[in-house]
Structure formats: structure tokens, C-alpha cells
Image (cartoon, rainbow, N blue to C red; front, side, top):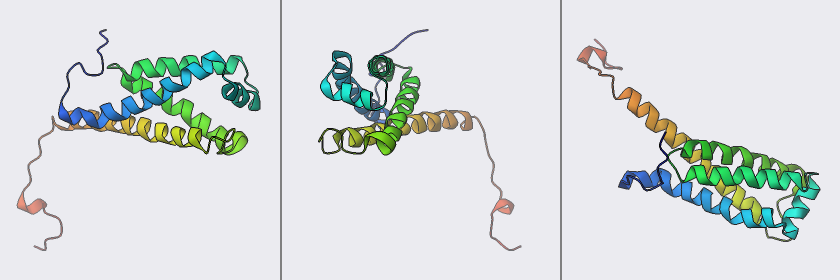
Amino acid sequence: MTIKPIFHSFKAKDLLHIVPRLIVAIILAQTLPFKFGGAEESIWIFEQIGWEPWGRYLIASIETVATFLLLTNYYIFGAVISLSIISAANFLHFTKLGFIVNNDGGTLFILSIIVIFCSLWVVLYWNMERVEKKVSNFEFEWNEEDEIGEDN
């Protein structure tokens, strides 16, 4: 098992999954000091859902793992973890926290939407690549008789 960094073999088409991975990793990484450091906003959020302090540390630890995985060749696991964690966070925005948290203008909610779309893109792109590799082994021959819509 070898862990390779994000740019170990870079091709132009790889930008389609590298850029969303970097976006998610940056967004997750920038929140970690606030969660681990006990920033007032983080404490307030986790108090609202009844998870302070253990939940804050648990979520920050899981996000740390996801951030590191997104930067390696095991990025699919990081994308699935980030998609799961942020989907739960969005659920809490819709149910308990609201869209504007401590007068942030909705920044946390908007960042969570960005993480959801980028993580989902990474998962879907990874799956699409797997399907292409499997389908490339098939050979199809088309005959004129196989054309759809022609009357014979």
C-alpha cells in the first residue's frame, strides 16, 4: 500500500477532480483551528446541538482525516467522509442552527454547500472513471441492421 501525494502524476484532465479536492481540503482545513482551539463560534454551534465539547473534537478529528485523505491517492474516502459530515452539518443548518450563524451572513452555510457539491463531484467523477475503465474492455460491432428508427 503506497500513499501518493495529490500531484504525483499530473495530467491536464486530472484538474477535473484535483481542483474540487483542493477546494474541499482547504475549506475543511481552515475550520480546524477554530474547532480544536475552542473558538467562541464553534463552541456556540456545538452547544446548540448538545455536542460540546466532545462532538467538536470528534468532528474536527474526522475532518482532519478527510482533509489528509483528499490530498492522497485515497481521495475517494476523503470525499465520502467530507460529504457525510457536511451533509449532517447542512441538516443541522436546516433544523437547529439556521442559515445565518452568529451574524456571519450565511458564510458557513454557503461553504457547506460548496463542500457538498465539490465532494459529490469527486465521488461521481471517480465512479465515472471506474466505469470508463471497465467499459473500455468491451468491443461492440454495429451493423446497419442494428440502427434504430429505420424501416426495413
